[in-house]
Image (tube, rainbow, N blue to C red; front, side, top):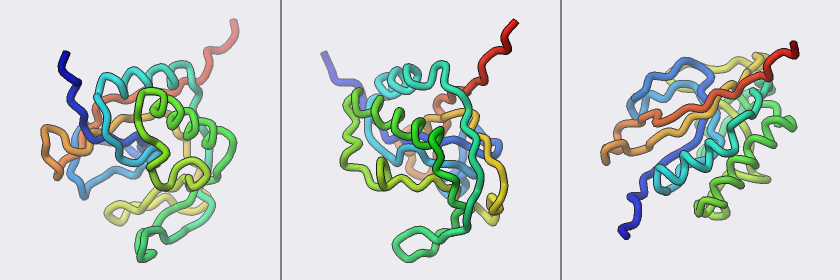
Length: 165
């Protein structure tokens, strides 16, 4: 039986409306839960669906403006790293690890995870802004083999529980 085709992915939450497809340099504002990795689409969709089903939205806020990157030239709004943020990040890593993704080789995850939203095209989440992380999206990093494009392949809404009757 042939091996499924592996593609390049990342897992994010958009904090502004996102088109189904956008250019490499035209990302909407977002939080990256899991940095780029290679895996088969069916495996990733199955793993993420299992861990996201029934999960609630996460409320956080922008705590500080920071500068990330090797040259400290990427302006970001660092988010409060509360229990909801931490639990969602670790659950996503765990389910991907169980599906065969080598999360141990990733940088900026686990204990090194610093939730943030990078400035994009002059758009920025101002310090003090409340941020509701209400869905999780799987983004193809090279849809159709084109490294200049990004495509939202699937999004899972995080739902508040239904009110008691």
